[in-house]
Image (cartoon, rainbow, N blue to C red; front, side, top):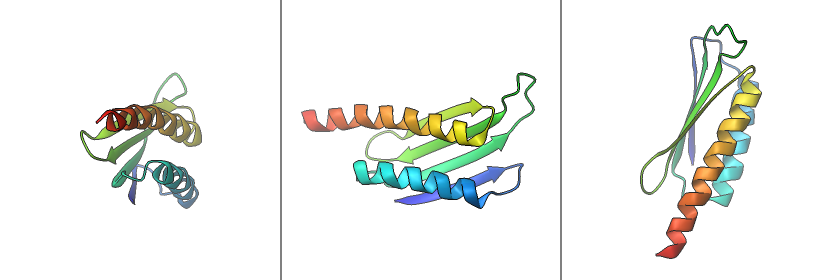
Length: 99
């Protein structure tokens, strides 16, 4: 699986890139039919204290799988986005097994 990580309007972070790559590779071992992952980190001004946004899109057989989260820090945003992707992947896997 290929992983593309982008940091939009903020400095790059090798630690965040390594953390996300590790978690996505764990997902790729569980779901070996994932082709590519695109990850975007954005920072927006938000009066509620959030504004750290993580978006992930997975290329796999069928429609693309997308998840997005907005938290008060990037680690939480990445974790909740990956959790949402895992839910979607398990649903997709269950449809594969029926055929």
